[in-house]
Amino acid sequence: MHQDTELATEVEKTIQQADGSAYMAIFVSTSSSSTPPARYFKDARVEIERCAKTMDEIANMIDTELATEVEKTIQQADGSAYMAIFTTTSTSGVPPGKYFKDAKVEIERCAKTLDELAVMIGMKS
Image: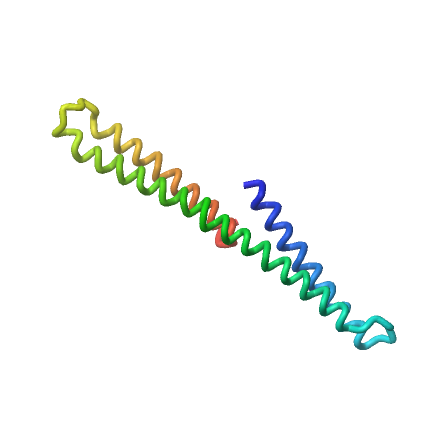
């Protein structure tokens, strides 16, 4: 998740730069500066667009990587629980507890992935 940290830092940086540019636009509009406020507003807009692009990258990562991982762990836990139901009537000799244990591992992986997602979108720190 190193890339996530870099992207979050990029979002923060671009927001700060946009804020600084907007502040300068306001400041120069009330000062004797020869720099027109429009220049700073343009800089702020560029930073906001960069921020939006970076946030879109984060959203795409969430949609693909984490959503896929959540779905995969749920399917694997479901499959293991399903096997536990039928193992007692099969000739496999595998006790149901083995499949329940496998399902529990997948559920724990799912919970961990959901926690990562919650941190990424700011619902958990």
